[in-house]
Amino acid sequence: MVEELVRFSITVSRDILAAFDQKLIQAGKHNRSDALRQMMRAHIASECWRKGKGQLYGTITLMYNHHVPSVLKELTSLQHDHETVIVCTTHVHVTHDTCLECLILSGDASEIRGLVDAMGQLKGIHSLDTVITSR
Image (cartoon, rainbow, N blue to C red):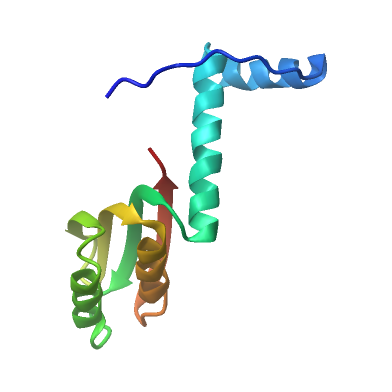
């Protein structure tokens, strides 16, 4: 789907524009419009995530000790309970004791938040990180 673009103007101080342009150069970007679109999308996604409303996309990345009693059973159960927002999962054995799992998500913000919160409560989870975006 090709987005229809709309031209608009904004007014900012020279200092803000100079700092913005410097950040673009440092990031190897040369297009203010692309950078502003990315910032706007990030802000919209952040608000949807904060309010628990709207359609979101993203990932959950977690590291856990698979020897902790019931962690595998509980993770599997949670994933089945939230199957409507999980597109796919990838599981990697990092060490004899540690697993890395990545879930790709698409769906309602409140359901995704519920899955993240529930996973964060499990014993044996070493780390849990999310990346959330919107369309």
